[in-house]
Image (cartoon, rainbow, N blue to C red):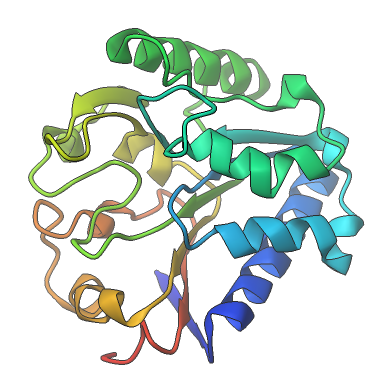
Length: 244
């Protein structure tokens, strides 16, 4: 099932996303004692992360019970301008009372296959004891969507779209994108909540295809997100939703 919500502009979209983050976090902490979130990269979530520092709803969060992960990472050092970790650190993590042990970054600076294997171990060690060997279960997976329909680092035609067992994988996307580490469909689709943040007129045509065309995840990778249990929430601004 899908829940599609449209907001007048990017600012109101960011406020709605920050409130949603805070609400899911609070309910997860109340139910299970912690909140695990896979953060999205790219530019769209930056205003959301900044609002989580200042918003009233987020100020009530027990940040000591929040565990932060990433949906994907570029294979660059953490202080590189293209690092998803670096972006989140500057916008959010440096400004909230979050323990260093609760920040589980992907080490993009090491050899890609090693980084993917290491992150898989990190996830299995974190989730399996709590869930007695059950599949990975993020409380929330935040996702973006590229103009080509990719999400996380799952790109058009990638063999990773057919992955069924690994939770994390490394792959060389292309010469422009280089090496990436990404969560795979099994990891994303096991989340309790998955929320897409989509903003801007350049996403409108692709968004219409993702939401209305027959399912073709090889061509529209964002369509691969179908949670095992629960709905996928799409938070859009009016420019991105213009063709729906």
